[in-house]
Image (cartoon, rainbow, N blue to C red; front, side):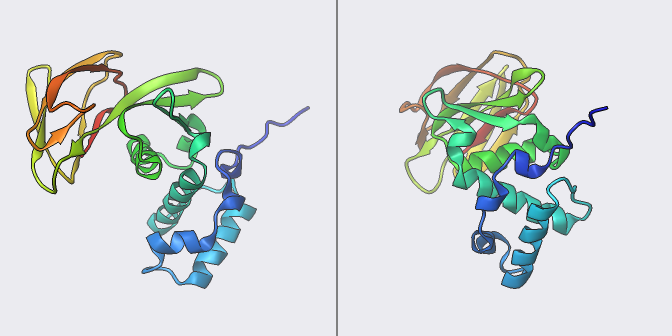
Length: 200
């Protein structure tokens, strides 16, 4: 009888390519260098372990952030403006929205990017779209209009707008920022479980 292989974090992200020093920027104020080295070594040795404490989860999220930063081409197609999130990550990081923001921050895509959940069994599924307005200055706001509801997104902040439909039509306008080079207009994007993510 062949036993099923237990998927570990190292099967999804390249743990061995991460350097402890890269985690210091995120966690260094709370964890000393030798502790970071030890934690990273343990994560590499035991890739199937799941975080049980808030501190462990914070460390694992920092590891995920650095792994995506170091290998953006593994999760991002620039030509298709698409981010691919492996569904198996949900075995280690239960909050899909948190994972999505980490991918967005680490990859830093421009303009409009669809986010797909990639499953070995079910293939690709749209879970939302990130929209990144280009600010003209350090302040101001972008107005998003979706289904007759208006959302004010201040420059320097981000917002999640529920939008689960496959096709999402929204309008935007701003005096202080542009989307796709325009200060107003209408766009159609893909929605999904995490909706429309405005990263201003």
